[in-house]
Structures are given as structure tokens and as C-alpha cells.
Image 1: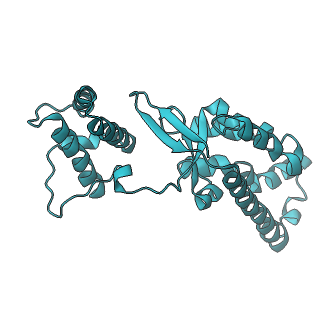
Image 2: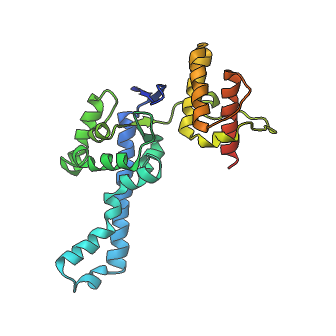
Image 3: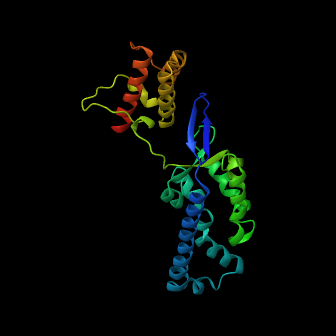
Length: 251
């Protein structure tokens, strides 16, 4: 088990567990089966049922190639499409409960997914369909952060979501049925902001690190552009987290 410690731009350390080689291989196989199924179904429907060959037979060679290739573009861009729209997951990754994350604490962007997709040419396809994944496998095993070449270039890694967590490990807070929020400006925060705030708050509170709590309170006030408040640091941050949950759960 490889643990990844992500140091965010707010100097907060967040610990994740890297997806195992076995999990990544199974996710790859699931995705491969889905792509093969797509190719087979497309061939049976488009090229046999509708007999598209007769439709394009009068076209020039390159036009025919362009039309045929267009039907298989979803296979080529499969990982890029799904990782972009499923927040770092393909169908295989979602089934295996693993996902792509940035190692600097930011959410991976379409550019990061594009870089990972482009380097699949080397990572997964360089040695052909049978031995292609060997390059990625060797890189993942020898990398300290379980990264293939595409991950190293994009600054990403693949983590597991199977950790046993409870509400204290998430951004969720227990709210009373008739909870009344105090600071509407918390809607300026993102889920990532709330997660960082809670992680920092929990650690600082447990270690009685009042200096960090003061810095955290000041940062929150700056980000949400709060003008007035009348609570001490611990009570204020606790209220911020509860308010954030209240508003996001009721949107």
C-alpha cells in the first residue's frame, strides 16, 4: 500500500492511498472490454445491419476511411472523455472505486486528462495490444507515487476511494433538523476548500495549534469576504463548516 501525501497551496497535508496495481489492471481490463463491445456492436449495426459499405462505396478512398474512422473515435478518446466528465474516472475506474487526482491538491483539469491520454501512446500502446501495458506496469511499480509516465507528466496519480471513512473524515457535518445558518457567504467556498478547512481545523484543534486556527480563520474571512463575525476561532470555523453543509445540501 502506497500512501500519498498531497501538500496543497494552503500548506495543508492530505493523505491518500494510491490505487494498487491490481485495481488499475482490473479497471483497464473493464474499460478494454467496454471498448471491444462498442467496436463489435458498431460493426454489427452500422456496417452489417445498415450496410454502410454500399453507401460509401462510390466515395474516394480517403472519404471512406474518414467515415469509418469517425465511428470508432469514441474508442480512441474513451479515457479522455470519461475522465473529463466523470471527475477523473472511466467506467472501469468507477467500478473499481479509483480515480485520478492532482498531486498538488487541485482538481485535475481537462488539460491534465489530455496529457494522460496522449502519453497512453507510450504507456499502454508502445509495445502493441498484448505487451503495451507492460511499460505502464513497470513505471507504476517503480514510481514512488505509483505513477505511469502520463501521470508524471500531468502531475497526477490514481488513488483508491475504498478507504473506510466516517463522517469525521469527510466535509459532511451533523446538522440539527432546524439548523439556522449564520454566514451565507460560505457559498463562495468549493468542496475542495471545505475539505481543506476541515482537515486543517481537525488537526489544529486536536493538537491545540491556536496559531494555525487563527491563520485559518483569517483565510476563511478573506476568501468569503466576510465583514462581521462575533465568534472565537474554534466556534467560528465549526459554524462555517456547518453552514457550508447546510447550503450545499439544500441547493
